[in-house]
Image (tube, rainbow, N blue to C red; front, side, top):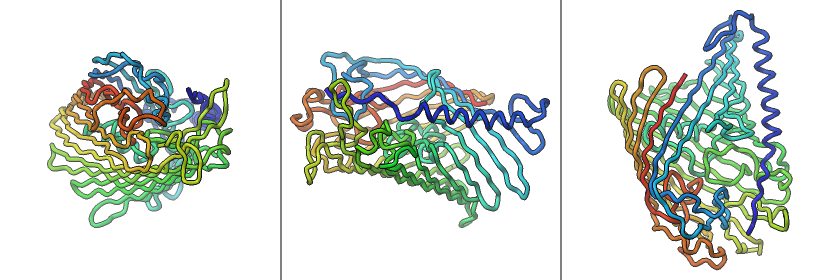
Length: 468
């Protein structure tokens, strides 16, 4: 068995450095305020405004055809072929799971001369009482803006591709996390510079243009991370259109579009031992307000991965420690004889939905489809499978910050389950003997059944959010 490394990126160092910076900034601002100015909620003290807001969420999911502890190595990355293996004889049944999220936002806004405004924003997310992504901030940034010149922001913040796909688009039309967190994008910028234009009047509509550049973890010198995201938003009457594209090098290969953009592999010490990789994503999401009650939405996304070769970077207790790799012909060779080559791949994902709102009530229905991928990889890594999710849901807004919601969802893979070959070494595994999730899916399973043991799954979700 090949044992993956559990050593993280230098996250603890980053977290400590970020906490020191955030603490110094907050302490500096607070110490400069009059004592009488300190209060809860948004308040003013001259030209400075401090705000504290955010959300909390609790959700419970009951899903059918779930196989608990089916995967022999349950926490292993799905790109590693030994993660394919399932435990014989496990039973799958209806299971329940709960999740809680909390995310406060602490903001500072300072009015400057000549119409300029300076802002600082800090935010972290907690999942089930723990930091969601240890070592990474959701918001830790400074910005300066002017209504004529636009906004310049530096620091850490969510990418547009993940943030807008997750909320409000995904939540409004039922795609939710499956649409936002799949594909070849990234979700969080770590050391980035962003310019956002002022609102431009184009064809009697409002246009905003934006560019973001992220250098990721600068400790990586051999495979330097580089990230570029372009975003355009156009609103005209009932039409709302968001178009965005990401192009990234050496940010860590994967298909979890919520992932932070950081470095090529989990430990900077292995940077000289691995080759580079890249991935890109282009996406468009459109909304159209039919009338005061009905809104339609649709999205399309193109994913492209370069692939990342598998490299044995170290030995621990006589077992190989591997890098982060993607879409690999494990045990094979490329045209010039290199072992375990990673193959490029591309795919399309789609989503569409309808939302109806009347008073405090809302209802939605939506479809998300992760398609088959095109690749020359002779080994099956999920490129022949697809996944469709159908959702019907609704909610009630209590108008005091609380929203209750419920939904039913159906998940269906394109291929029937095959697990008989999952335990067979990849080099000698018969084609089609182990059914894997689509290449665009972030993990196995996603939202429901494991494709190796069940083709379909149904889920009932109930939850409540509180926004303050």
